[in-house]
Length: 148
Image 1 (cartoon, one colour):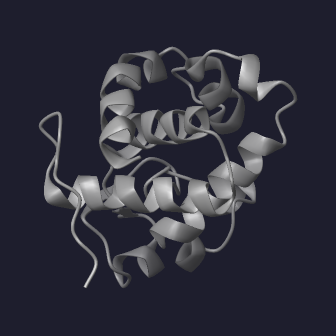
Image 2: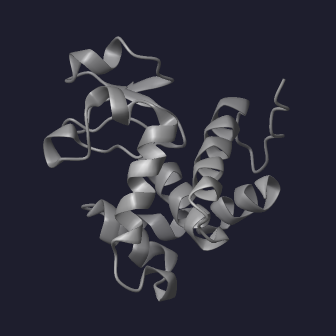
């Protein structure tokens, strides 16, 4: 049996479990700790580290989820959009697969390692609120430090 990560920073066990999945995926991809912080900052901002289905995406409601959102056709931890080419609803509702897709996109960003966490996250996500990721960096760093 895998030991559950101890929640930090006021996160729930569900949120911490998702964070652990994101970090494990990054470790399998042999990425540096900075990538984990970028990914966790993004998931905190996009979904509060919850695997969200979407009221407007019926298929997502039939898959395992922690809550329901309604932003366009965004689903999952990273609020990735099937209509934007991120993948199928089923893929994006799977935390490990959605994390892999996030990291794959991050690795396509030239110079991401030297960007601020906010700039790297925004370059991947193309959010309407590009500065919002900055408010998650401290908590994301605390979470990653607890997991690695």
